Image (cartoon, rainbow, N blue to C red; front, side):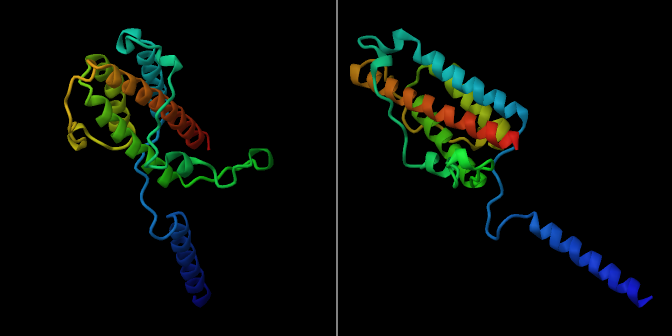
Length: 191
């Protein structure tokens, strides 16, 4: 009878240890992502919509947007958070990234670009890019429309040359960021 007690206690301890071991490191944040195959679809749709808006010449009258430099939002350090720690791809089959940190940075970037693009009060931006951001936030990051703060600035930015130029640069930067988002989602879903 006593050996059975040891067996039961040992199994219970192992079960508890196993449950703790899959929980992640102490202090780790729960992932903000509800990652499904649909998230890959939504991220691709966002990339397509940003690319399509960049092709709308009438938004950038007076200059060729394709010839301008991208302006990437660097405060969130998304690229460094989403770069594999052992990034020498030729020598490693397994890439390690801090998924929670990377996804948190992506979430912050999406909020930033959403607010920035909404501030332009342009229906073409709102109906394509901002809508795609909202869709991605709601379906993949557990963010409801009610959780998304309204734009702080609501101005018609299409009037001046400098504002159209700035929009072009911001969209080009966001286009680069959406490529990063797509790569991260593809990587996480392929594991």
